[in-house]
Length: 186
Length: 228
Image 1 (cartoon, chains in turn purple, brown):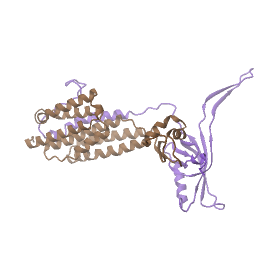
Image 2 (cartoon, each protein chain N blue to C red; image 1 turned 45 degrees about the vertical axis):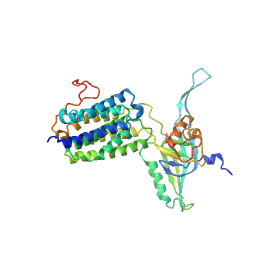
Image 3 (cartoon, rainbow over the protein chains, first blue to last red; image 1 turned 90 degrees about the vertical axis):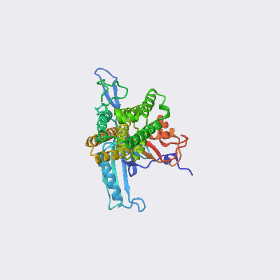
């Protein structure tokens, strides 16, 4: 019998590439509504201020398995490191909800040794990372490469190995420029 | 030190080889454009007067730089320019003219490689990582040669150029998504995958191209796709 569609669509869950199992998961979002009520009026006005940031609450676990994760504590520590990492937003692959770039809000790790050893249970709350709403100044690194590259040409032309040939080299001219033009000389 | 006839002949041979490699590496589609025509004309002129430009006027170095610059503007790709650099690096000249031309041609290819990378639009961090690895390796030989020749100015310039390229690629990498792999138990169409992964069907063509499939209706796992 073929697998049901929802099972076929399941993705192995991971955060920053660190895999884990999922027990329950929840996604919360909505609209940011400001409700205005006016004096002497019966009808309010609900002002829509945009979508709420998505929150993903995941009950995850790392399980001891003789064949797959014989050292579940190392796998648990990997997940903790990924959750505590300060490397900015990370990729959350969700079993049923697709992928999202998220940041970790809070998480807790619980182990119940008397009831069930070899399992580490996580409660993780992820927040949608989104992007900055305002443009931020960025260095024009492309232009810096071009400037450095163009400035390198006269340096290479005056290298000792070329000078040792005993033939004077004329000043470098930009392609297509008129010789002698100030803008054409490198 | 001056140039002997033997050294001059070898230098002309090396210079001719470099220019012919540039001409052969130019994409055929680019050779009809105005910049492609200028490149071919400049290369032809230099091939004709190379011996006198090396030994008498000294204009060879400026003209060779001009040919490299025009080759880039004519649409030379990173891979093509790097193949010219690698082929030039493999030469083993003996005379002073041949060695100077080889070193200079390698330095000029690095200048052009840097500018080609600066003008390249990358779509993923993985593409930038791969470019950073190859371009760093391309600089190694030239840096070592400059150090061995006690050519400190060229050495420092090459280090600065490599640094500028690394800073540029690293800063652009920050804003790009990563390539990740998705596994589905059954073969799916690209349109379905686009909807599933990104919540929108308009990236099906991108997914099909990324996975190099012949038919986007049948996309077998693992699926390569951008993380966002």
